[in-house]
Length: 198
Image 1: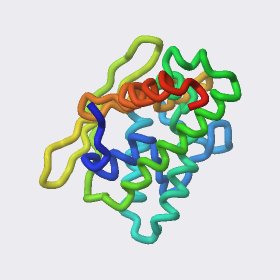
Image 2 (image 1 turned 120 degrees about the vertical axis):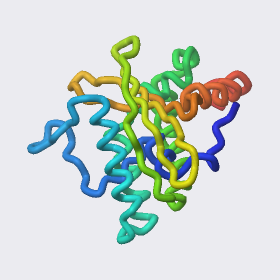
Image 3 (image 1 turned 135 degrees about the vertical axis):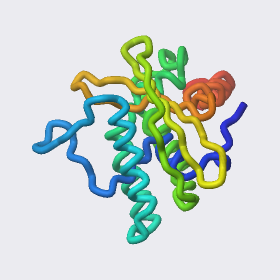
Image 4 (image 1 turned 60 degrees about the horizontal axis):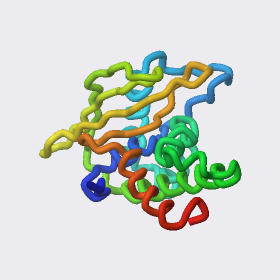
């Protein structure tokens, strides 16, 4: 089953790719005054709050929002881990150079996919619905995307803690459909036909 982007509201599209359109850019870890959310739930809540603030900000044009999205992706997503999960056993077939190229292309692919939904914001809000610990030290934060006049969309964020204690998004599960699993099946088909060079 394929996840159809047209069914996903702008706020989900943005958050799903960690398209964090911060109203004011948070300091990077280690910078003076940096404040990191202490819990996974607080991390996701901050992302949601900041995304919504920008989506509601009529003083930003589309290009400004896209620029913020791209800049912030690196601070909230672990693209290398997500790439490994998408490629699964094929990761080992890639040379270090091919891995680096795949991660860069994968990031560009996600940005392009979700940037197209920036204009579709329709007053959605995000509610944190709970959280649970996962194997390997991961953590899943459950949310509801509340849509005016429509059913909620259930979205889970799979997070992994980095060595510095900060959290990064490694997968998004919308209505039971994992972004990683969905993309894995697509990329596996290409790789099985063409190999890592494909």
